[in-house]
Length: 141
Image (cartoon, rainbow, N blue to C red):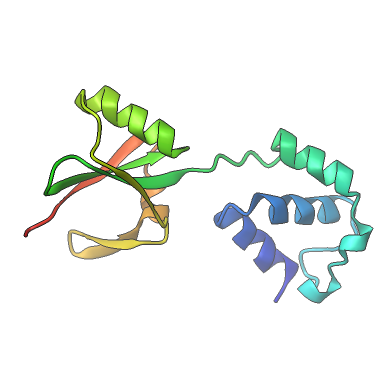
């Protein structure tokens, strides 16, 4: 596997530490995108510099999660937010009530939308502001 593939995946899946380490190694020309990942040598890294890069978020990561908040016994709302607390506060502001519970889902969870299937990770790209309501679910029991 190439460094380029790992770097793209680290950005796609928001693996901040890995992405910043690879960014550092690429910027310092200790590796190239065309190298095999076996060429990565973490002994060549100035860990303090990378820690500072991660802390200052040089690559601009904004970690977003998806939460299911229970509205009543049958109805749920999915909310994109930066934290569970943010999702609950957004729910309270939007619906003027406290949710019955709040659970984080995987962004890779897939659901049906019309005739297609979409993951929350792909759906998130459709939103420009966070927190945001991703959709609703009604249990049919």
